[in-house]
Length: 450
Image 1: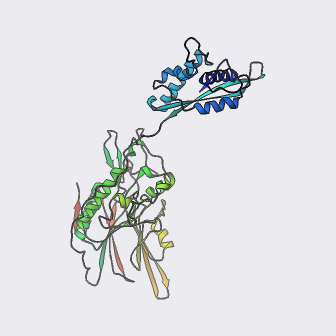
Image 2 (image 1 turned 60 degrees about the vertical axis):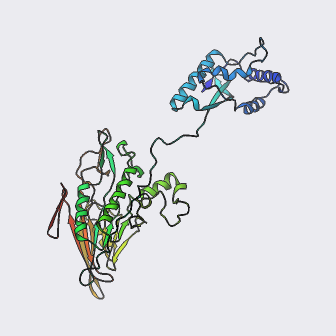
Image 3 (image 1 turned 45 degrees about the horizontal axis):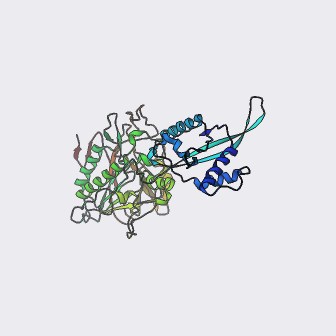
């Protein structure tokens, strides 16, 4: 904010010296006071606080008045300047949404500027500026801070199955859940995961009673932590997602006591990436005295994975889980929209690979010649357990003018898989299970969620 006073720095210096003379500490020479002297005096006086009522800004210059009645020092500011200062202060505080009670001082500055007059000739004008000093302590976040999900006691269950005849083991594989939420036009929370598909998968898991469970990554969506444009309907949904994952983990532990591994996908990776990009000092922080715990701002800590005996395999996209020497799983980072993504893994991998990430049900095989004869590998994607109607933010999805996702059928398929295998360099059997609108068939049994 600038003030246009009719008097320049000489008059200001005279006012300052007159004030200091009456206080007992004036400058050496009124007529030769330099701008540097004026500036030093202002720096010494910058912490003079204004009145709580900012509209009475006249009071801030009252220090220039003579303490003896009847003899007052004339101010440099005109009435027009005073009104302009008041208006500028009011506009600045309103624009910054600042409570006038938080203003702790004003800092006045002056400088010379060269401005051309109407004849095009340069003239030197003295300008003034006022800086408002505002206290910033005791300011709390307007949004709730993300908290760790409530702790719960895992159920006590028996030991997992010892294996089928001949040493065979079984793993139930749950692909991309994309757990998350958004608010519809009425403000109600709606899931991006498909509760019916998840329930069907857990029904099958219960009946299979496996030796092992694998979550293939992207178990969460975390749109607030992503790098893409976000509409307001997804704001403040991260806490709800963390609480849902904690409940989902409890449901898993109520079903099985088998080992559970959770592969990190690109969406779980959003949380550490967000910290590195926006709050690097908070990356990797742990509770004091708990060096063996997960960092406090991580999915396995916030969702109590250790309490639920869930092993979190970090390190996307390199993280892998090996069932035996012939087949492994990884979340994956390949996408082939125009064809079969699994064939890209058949070209790049030398063992059978289960990947996720693409939300499609795919499977392919390739046989290669080797010294010991033909060697066949397979690559498969079991689909997803998220909604496939446009609710999950995606490249081909869209939102209406209120930011709510519009209905759109993605080229995605819901499903899961069951893998039978032996340890070591041994064969395996991969069984994909398709899920349609909360309905599936496996092992001659029908599973349905209305």
